Image 1 (tube, rainbow, N blue to C red):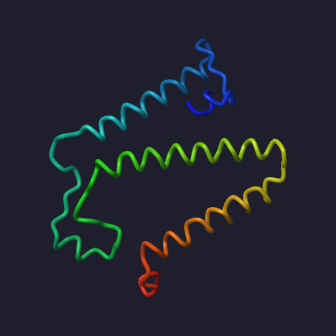
Image 2 (image 1 turned 180 degrees about the vertical axis):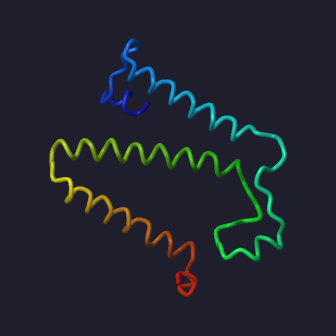
Image 3 (image 1 turned 45 degrees about the vertical axis):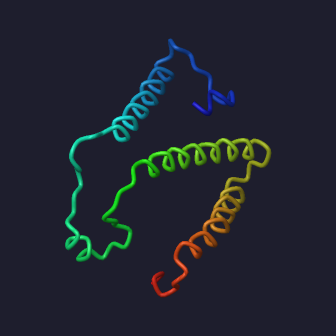
Length: 126
């Protein structure tokens, strides 16, 4: 949808490629809405003792879908914008390896301080 908005992609209703992209986008949006508005029982339920037995530090006993859903949506929008910007940079400077290197370098430079703020205990990074 962002590619259409920025006029990188053109939508032709009669084209099978455009039809499949529209169906894929609608399916994705429908899937997100099902996940957000699902009011049934928990699908993935672990007891508190099972959580402590597993070595995965990122497994949480609490889930906050109200914050997680919009943050996940913002993540996907920002990644899409990053790809759009990267494609525009590639038109100006077509060296793929150099552009990819700086993309990853700046991503590391942004995430490293945030990771250290989120987990200041350096022994937990082992």
